[in-house]
Image (spheres, rainbow, N blue to C red):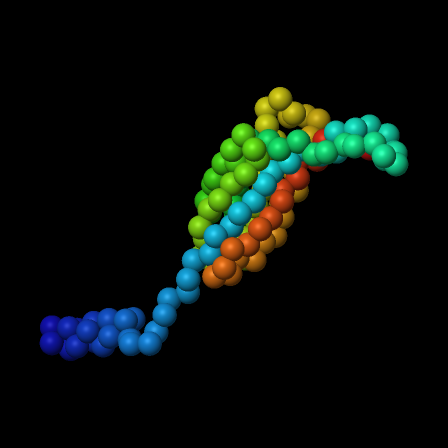
Length: 128
């Protein structure tokens, strides 16, 4: 019992050693858009802005994961914010129901650090 207690206290001392700082979480700010919205080749002077959409974003810890590590939602302006530990993540927006079958979204790799990371996720309409 005494050895177990000493080992446990030594481990605890290492975990909270003075001067040691845990990895700070970083904020991930993003926007989800639907694009392109105009058919045919781009024409000079023709405006064809992407449309911000509200949807669920699945967040994965590896590119081949099947189950999301976390989820978040974009608001009506397509914007989202989530705090994550530093590391690599793959974000995949879900295709909203009204665009199912016509649009698709590919995962985007993002590296989150201790600061704010920004990303734009595109749900592709397939329109060309």
